[in-house]
Length: 424
Image (cartoon, rainbow, N blue to C red; front, side, top):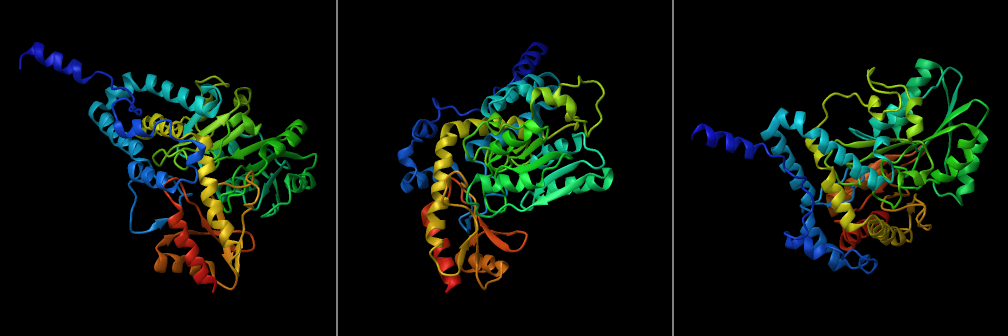
């Protein structure tokens, strides 16, 4: 090969590759599914069985009803992730130094569109826990300041505040939120009783990871923000499971996971801070160069896993194809399918508010009277090949059941058969 041919070849090889987004024109399988996700499909099991076959490559050795830990990537997202690893490995530092910056701007633009906020209000993190820690440790909390948590908040968030209690002398006030509340006012009254003139912050979880209960976050924010109390939100499970935009929560600080219901590869979270509040957070990581209202000053992490971030547009495209409203309806239908029948089985106690559609979606939990929870989980797996997980409430243990889009009612029938057996 002569010099001219070599240079020409190098030029072609270094050309920037476009994002791997869903191509409905050239991919017959995708074209077949486009615009088919309508309300009449919510209960169409044949439709969802074909959906699973076309979009998910999951083990046939067991029925996975523990999809709350993280979301299995749909095949197009998984393939895009592999191609992004290959792309980065082939183009190495040249891509990172000359092209990634522009690609990242586009990724943030797409995330902002999906979330309903400005790109300058978002920061990609490694997970929701990291995002929430940036908020918690960045708040101006001092000795004697009070923060309110509830017993069912995520343990990592509770521990972050407990660390500040030791380091700064803040005071933690813990309330008990009812498992199955009568109404929103019953929940709000718990916070009202705990608030004092020293209350600076309320932590709330949009969808409780233990039971799936959806908290009235907007009402909490509307009531206490005017009193000068910051309301921060852990939205790890609600984001992309139920239909909302981040501003709908009415809060200035939110932490999100992108590898749960959004379906991106493991290792991506999202921090939202309302633009005029960025300056109020002290960075956890050293950064003296960026302006105080630049959210990037809160995320001087060093190099993150770039292929994971590069795959975000594909995960967004998949969610856009299915649509979040339809996704929410299907997930709630699957949960209601098993909880309604399970509630009628003697000794089975449903510990999630399932009657009101505003209070739960995919996640629900139960306990069996007279049976150790660990034994229930073991027997469901050993005899019925149904995989679930134990969750620890303040005064009891429960089994959490979390179906997702690739699950179907036949699989939930197996769960119900197992519950009848265990409760007999």
